[in-house]
Amino acid sequence: MSFDLLSEPWLPMVDSGGEPVEVGLRRALLEAGAFRRLAGEAPTVTAALHRLVLALVHRVYGPASSDEWALLWAEPEGLPPGPLDEYTARHPGAFDLLHPEEPFLQCPPLKVTAPGTAGKIVAFRATGSNRTLFDHTTADDRLTLSLAEAARWMVTTLAYDTSGTKQSFTTVRISEGGLANRFGTALMEGKTFHETLLLNTVLYNSDAELPLGTTAQDRPAWEAPPPEPEPDERPPYGWTDLLTWPSRRILLHTRQENDATLVDGVVLTPGTRLTADLDRVELMAGFRRPWLKGNQQGRMEPVALDELRGIWRHSQDLLLSSERRWWNTFQAKLRDRDLLPAEEPERQRPAALNHIAELVEDGLIPEETVYTLRVFGQQLGDRGGDTYFWQEESVPAPVALLRAENARIGYLIGYAVSLADDLGEALTMLQRDYYTAFHGDRPSKGRRQGTPVEAVTGYWPRLTVPFADLLRELGTAVLSGDSEIVPMERWGNRTVELADQDARRWLHGTPRRDRLVLAAAACWEAYEEQRQSLGRVFRNGLDRYSPSQEERAS
Image (cartoon, rainbow, N blue to C red; front, side, top):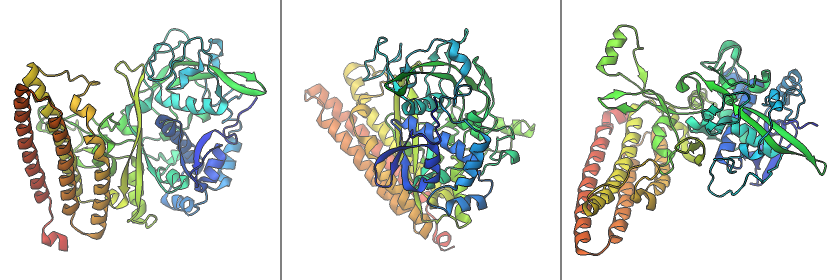
């Protein structure tokens, strides 16, 4: 039996006409210009498959320089077949899902362990104590998967499996969640899958230790010998090693049914734990350094998706070039003793965006281009043993903003996001204060519960489109030299309008008894006062970062 992922259809693509089609890895690369995008059954599937395909692109094509990248970009139909043929000739059978000795991304020694249900690798299936919202699978149900489905979900499980108790090979059963659960995977999307692949490549040459953090030992999981069944921990050897990180040991169990090979079980045990600072090695995520109490800054944290508030709130961290600031006095003393570097980054965008900004300077990408930045992510439940939600969001990515070197743009976007956050908090306090006046205490602020006003209003979702418009208009202003203040004022007016709509909707929905009406009126007055104060702060910020006539002329 054989199922070669290079030729067998298993990758879920959308063609140029919008129709879904499954293809093998070879066709996905060589005919990449014929497809619109890669789109899996869930956001996590889409993200995990992109990471795997990008690892293959890097190992086959590099590119090791901007000149090599330009040659690949100049062939919009797809990537050239020669390098792929040479690579697969050096690694025969490496992509065979059913290889008798080294099955793709699997651990053959696990064959001595009895397999469990195939539902273990399908995130929306209920297995054991893993709760899902809609699935009612029981232990007596025998789920079967086609080889294409099993391949997709196996790759996804390696990146996004939940934490907690797993099947053990000997004694170790507890495992942390898959690596990609820690961050939102950022993907720059072009007009075709060919453009998307190249827009998300960084310069790669393991022998030259490119990109930063990559060593000569770097290789994707399919080039390495099958892993030992016992879990371990280590730092990554490089970028393609991280893209195919073996956070689990997996072995698929198959059976024949009506001349078809089906996957009817899987062994899933703890795998390799990453021992490295994520911001030093992960290139498909944005990072930010939060402010802590005492005017101190914490460690770099990855940008992740939020159930309610859109990813656009992190546009600074995802789109703008890294910014560095001096740390506090205590850290300055450590610097004097050579214990800390002179400066630390305030934010860090995905590495591919830095490469795109350089390509514009080389004249390979027009500065007026606007791409789409998609972010994929998953959030686990309180104990990490089940999936709380998964999500895919997008923001416009004007190339002009990627290249913007003026710190003013960052501050303006920061003011835009702060206004939205502060108005959202004012809406929250509107209802909390009303609740306190009536009940004498405050409602629970549990992480999952949130607050009633956030749960029932459309304030946050309705800000996504206006903010996308703001990003496009800021990109146009940077490109043309026009004032950025006009689109900022438009954003401010629209944000206040949406907040007022929700506040009035809440006010009109309060009970009409005397005591409650008086409490609601007092809360409304407090909200109006807060909203006016936030408006003044926003306008003062715009005035502060408005360029002078001399600056505009220069």
